[in-house]
Image (tube, rainbow, N blue to C red; front, side, top):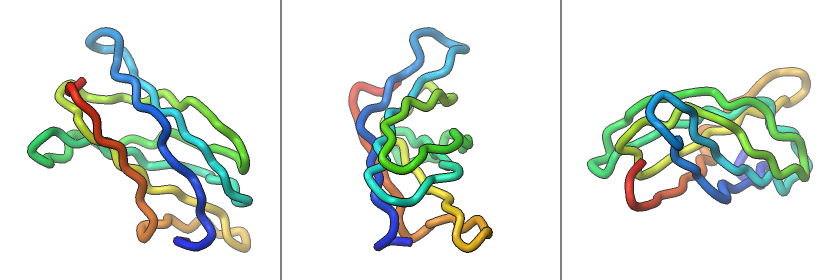
Length: 104
């Protein structure tokens, strides 16, 4: 996956109010369609606050994906899933992350 996957997290938007979703801006610069992205959120101490699936991003597409982003989040990390010969493969060897302050 490492050589085939080319995407980055451009921006993380915290929820505007409690109970609302935040969003992540994803830029897929590669030839492969991403069929799903798992988003993990972390606090300043590195504790995992949650995991959600944010869906697909096609090749050469920049897309805003809404997601539950918990209060206290200072870092998000993603793992993309691609389709290879009809089978879905999660690229655990190619995570992407974005840290930010202040916390959500």
